[in-house]
Image 1 (cartoon, rainbow, N blue to C red):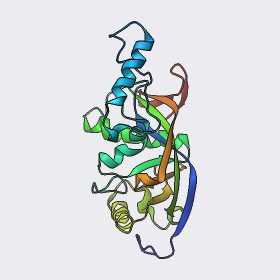
Image 2: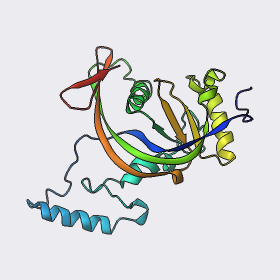
Image 3: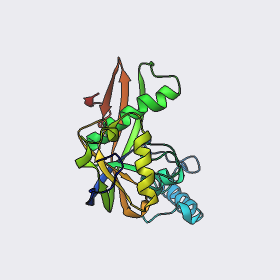
Image 4: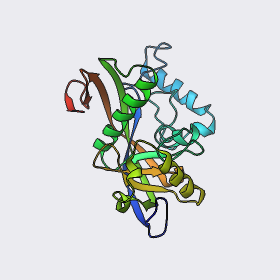
Length: 232
C-alpha cells in the first residue's frame, strides 16, 4: 500500500481526554496587585478587564488568575489554528493541534522540539543549565480520526524526521475534510492525535505544571519543583 493511499484506512472513534503540553509559567501573577493591597479590589479589576475584552478572547471557563492571559480555550485549543506554522502534518497552510494519550508522550515530544527547535534556532543547542516551564491541559476530543496506527511499519515516514511525506498526507486529509489523524509518536511509545479543526476539541482543564532543566547533556523533568520526575 503506497504512502498516502487512503484505500483500506479505518477510522478511530476518539472520545477521551488528551494531554496538551504548552510553554507557560508555573506561577500566576496578580497583575493588578500594584493598584491596591486588597485582593477583593484585584478581583473587581479582573472582572472589569474581562467585561471589556473582545468576545473573541472569551470562553466559558476563563483563566482569571492571570487577567491578561487569553481564555483557557484559546491557550489550550485555539492557538495553533490562529498562529499557523509548519509541523509534522502541515506545511504551514493550516493549523494542527497536537495532543497525546499519555502525559509522558507529551514530555518526550516537547523536550525534543525544545532542544531541536527553540534552542537550536537560537543557537543555544550546546548551552548548559537552561530551563523552561510548561503547562499541561486535559482537553476532550470527540472525533472520528483517520487511524494511522496499523500503518506504522508499512509507512515509516509517519515517524521520520523529514516531515515532507506527512505534510503531503496531512494536506490531502485536510482538503478532504477529515478532522485529523490518530498516529504513533515519533519520540515515545505512546499515541498522538493531530487534529485539523478546533470543533472537535472542548473542555480544557489544567492538569499540571512541569519544568524542564537541561544540564550536563540530560533533561531533568520536574512536576514538583524540588523533585526530579524522570530524565531524558
